[in-house]
Picture 1: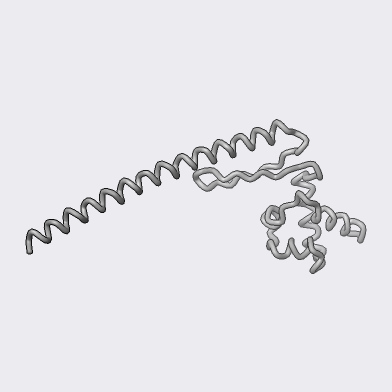
Picture 2: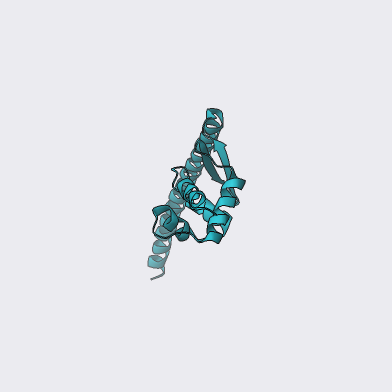
Length: 137
């Protein structure tokens, strides 16, 4: 690998839309290793450069792409690369996220109300127990 090729790979690493964790996960390198390459703290070995180069070739990530990661209710992580030149895709993803937020907020409201009801019920039970204990004495 030539110095020019190495520099091009490092330049791609430093692009704004790059997610170090995604590269680390795909290449088997650690997050800190990728971050050190990005900041210039360390230089990659030839083997690591080749792994990163393969990642860019396989991921087909360019300057106009956005990585969107969704985690569904079962914990499955779904990462996809979308062209940021496609506003419909991004609008759809934002709409899905908004829907999830609304759903989660409703779940929180429901749980909060259940906690209030249980707390009130427990307070009444405590009061009844206290009255029974006084009658026994």
